[in-house]
Image (tube, rainbow, N blue to C red; front, side, top):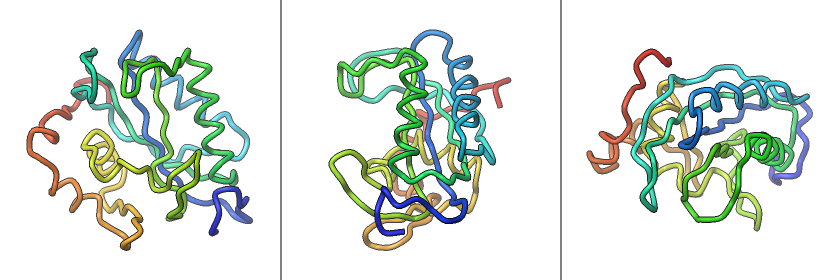
Length: 177
């Protein structure tokens, strides 16, 4: 596929990152997994453990983050719309960039597609810089590879290149694997 609106003729792999820092964070993540899995053309193949993470941006509560490995027959744009629908179903309000939220659902990778449009960048433009994406992704898939315009990069190598403080800010959530 070369375009985010191309519908695949076979199921393709996708990676989605989840985050929540308002309300019942764990319950919201669990509900979001079910919400995505309920979409026709989407199947959750695997989920990472849940990690507690320091927030990025303005002062706000800590996040719970996880990553899902999906199989989908949706186009990348349709998958983005499904993710946004799940966010909306959980009361997501977009006011402050990087502000607190009930739920954030981001498409990190879609079948290795590398593309930038006004509404969707693949891979997610900041995934390579975010320990709260890379740590859970590696938990779900130790061999994870992030496509980039310069070629594929191992998620483990990207994580190793991040500041130690960023990586330390991603902590396993006991009892919520």
